[in-house]
Length: 134
Image (cartoon, rainbow, N blue to C red; front, side):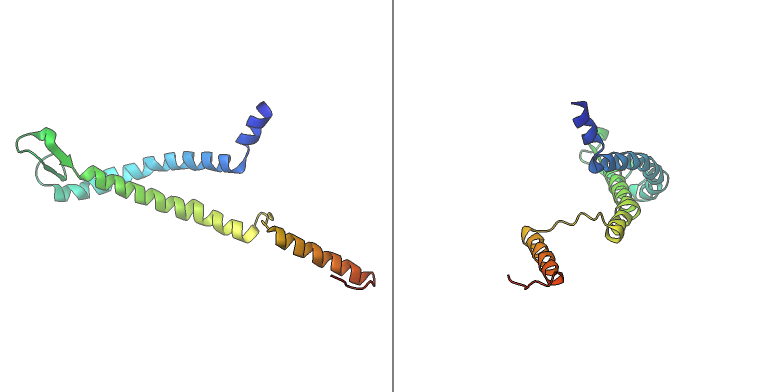
């Protein structure tokens, strides 16, 4: 039972996923600080004079009905920044490395494997001086 669990944990995809989650979580703090310190003040320019920020109120004189648009824009900017950095820092280099170095585990169809076997047998017969009959 523990051997199966160990094999599961040491599988490449699980380890890669765990690393991605940890790096992504750590990076969220950086992006959140960026958007809180830079993006939110820029959005506040468009928000007006009240302290509620960018948005609109559904019912006048009822602050509870204020719909905040600023946090939605900030969350969208957070998402775009995180997705872009993860793509350009992790995904793109990993894809290039796989193409360059490869795993060596090419998935061949049954027909391709049979063609390779046929060619190897044919080469062996020619090297031995036998006739080529297929």
